Image (cartoon, rainbow, N blue to C red; front, side, top):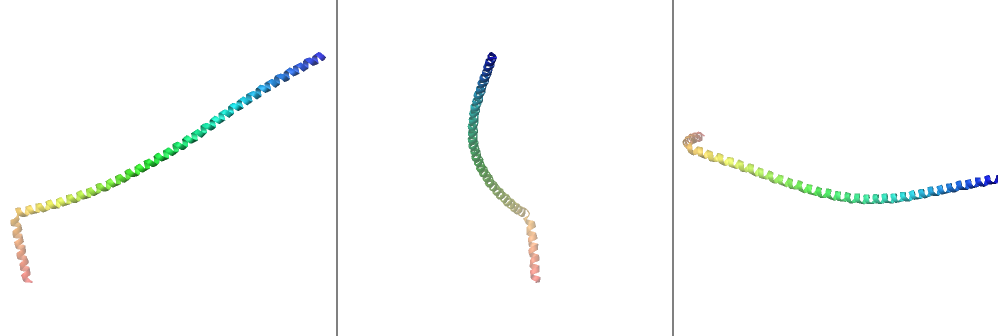
Length: 139
């Protein structure tokens, strides 16, 4: 009985020792995984911080570029507007020149017709002036 009891104690001690060893190994694994997890968390935090800084910088650059483009666009619109006014002024000036030229050509043509057909104009003017003097005399 004592031998069996000793044997049972030894088995219990061996079993307890194996369980303690297994528990230590499990604890070591948990500690190692916790350590690895901390490293991953720190790396993720660093990546997040770097990404936020890059995002701020890119956002700032984009805003500056947008502002610059907006200023350029306003300058182009202003330039186009001024050019449009200039073109409209030139068109108005050209229209006036065309009207003046047409009036001048009309006057030249009338003068040409008067010189070609002056005998008709002279006789009609004489008859008009004769009629006018008759009317004047009657009054």
